[in-house]
Amino acid sequence: GQSLEQPSEVTAVEGAIVQINCTYQTSGFYGLSWYQQHDGGAPTFLSYNALDGLEETGRFSSFLSRSDSYGYLLLQELQMKDSASYFCACPPGGYQKVTFGTGTKLQVIP
Amino acid sequence: EAGVTQFPSHSVIEKGQTVTLRCDPISGHDNLYWYRRVMGKEIKFLLHFVKESKQDESGMPNNRFLAERTGGTYSTLKVQPAELEDSGVYFCASSQDRSNYGYTFGSGTRLTVV
Image (cartoon, rainbow over all chains, first blue to last red):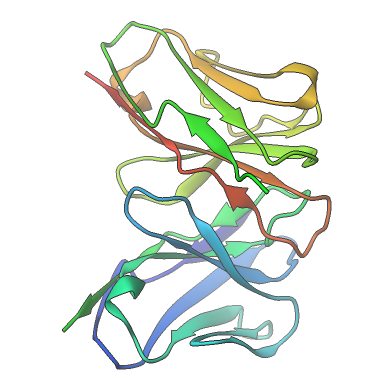
């Protein structure tokens, strides 16, 4: 089986940087991905780390350490529109069933 | 390209009634998934279609839930009879047959059983 744990809530100030952590236990590992979901909206695929290290996509970066069974999503230059729930997930999707993390609700405040 | 479409967007039904949710995946996506998010908790897998065949239905809660995918195109998820604990947001997702490609989700159907 698989389980992915995240903090339930994080609050950060507009313009700041925030890190959302994810620790996982899996019987087989195919990489870590991240999804964003705004209230009432569809979860949206953000990023995927197949290997250790940092992947950068604009203001968002995602990091993976397979030896530590740990990853994080880093959001820079926070904007109010970044307020949403963020889920780590394994594997990213494709033809495979995805297990989602417990989800982190990010609130960006002025 | 059109995204994943789900309807209805909201449904409120009484306990014991039947509800059918529909999902139209992205054209050409063989993989179709149903997921559910209950009470703001994690998103839980329900089942996976490859074309018209059920690849994995291990997440279906019980036999009150029935999913079909006619001709490998759209899919329906029927709940009969509905119970209070079935309330939640039901998401459909579709994907290409590539392991490093994320899902495309629909906006979900918010089901409330009263």
